Amino acid sequence: MQFPKRSAMNIVQEIEGVIGEKINMMDSEGVIIASTDPARMNTFHAGAKKLIDERLDELVVHYDGEFDGAKQGINLPVTFNDKIVGVIGVTGPYEKLRKYGQIIRKMTEILILDIALSEQMWIESRARSRFLNEWVHASPAEFATLAEGARSLHIDITAPRRVLLISAVPLMNDDATKTQVTIEEAERRVSELCAAGKDIIVYKLDSRIALLLPAQSDEGMLAFASRLKREVEARCQVSLAIGIDAEYRGYQYIAAAFERAERALCTCLRSPSKQPRLYDSLNMEIFLGEIPDAVKAEYIRRIFRNCSPEEIAAYISMLELYYECEGSVAEASKRLFIHKNTLQYRLRRLAETTGYDPRSIKFSSLYYNAIHFYRDISSNII
Image 1 (cartoon, rainbow, N blue to C red):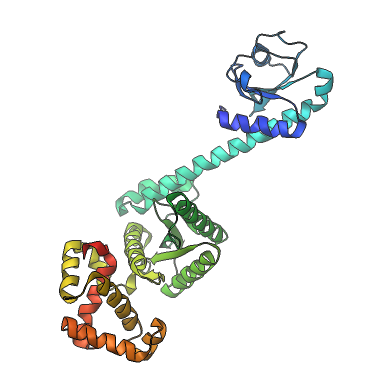
Image 2: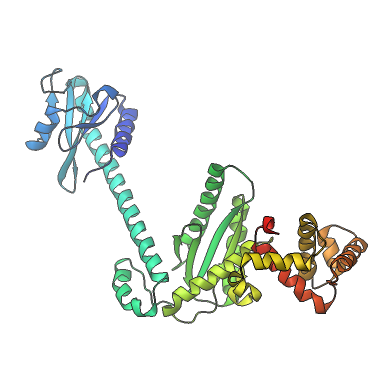
């Protein structure tokens, strides 16, 4: 095992904190790769090399210079999987240090084992993420090839599963570093909450978290998503957007399930409330991506003719809530924190300005399209 210098430095600092003596760590070639004495870094320690070559249980340096590059002290081999991987050395008189010998050796080996386990977990995590990425983008014809790799990772790709995609949206407009910390905190919380779930596969995409859950009804998926959103938002300064795929069709269609969950997530991200969205609840959102942004912008300008960008933004917010309330002026005005007469006035004014009455069933679809187009593009296009 070749462990990085940063890990070796962590080890010598940990041991120094326990025994209060100067510590050195040498690699299998006798070179000091970590030391609490900066002047000794990257220098050759002939005593350590002798200990390794002759497989000694201990090497005592009685005085400075007895071995090239060595100072008075005690040097002990560090083993991993029955192989000497390095030497740990403590500077000082032997009589003072010998009582620390076994403690130092065991402590070092425990720290190295911890490093090795962490590295192994990291490697396995990368392998798992790489496999999952290949799996969810595979065609049905590729599943036979993937099955063997799945077994080595203890994943049953034939188990019925549904896909849920998550994106954490920070509530505060912080700098890039703070924003990233906020997002990562929310993602860790999602992973922690899902770790207790039976047979839930969690893995990170570029800007998403993917969850593969045991197949269940739309109601079950929505209940899970709503609970997860509520618990994460209670602890983290984010709004959690969640997209859910369609009903389970078969394990061979996992790629299609991901595509549908992505479309549902994109719709959720455009929504001010960020409530979890099912793919099967989407309407015109399914083909929004097929319409060029320039066409969407032109459509909005035509519907809201004679309106400034600021007025369009205000009308969009008002109409979105108005239609969510099924055209109830009383309910919409309450949620907008205005008097219902004020809302009636604004609706009439919009009808007079554009020629399209938002209260009319005939024209409501025009505004419905405009709302979705507006949420889908940057306002500076309009």
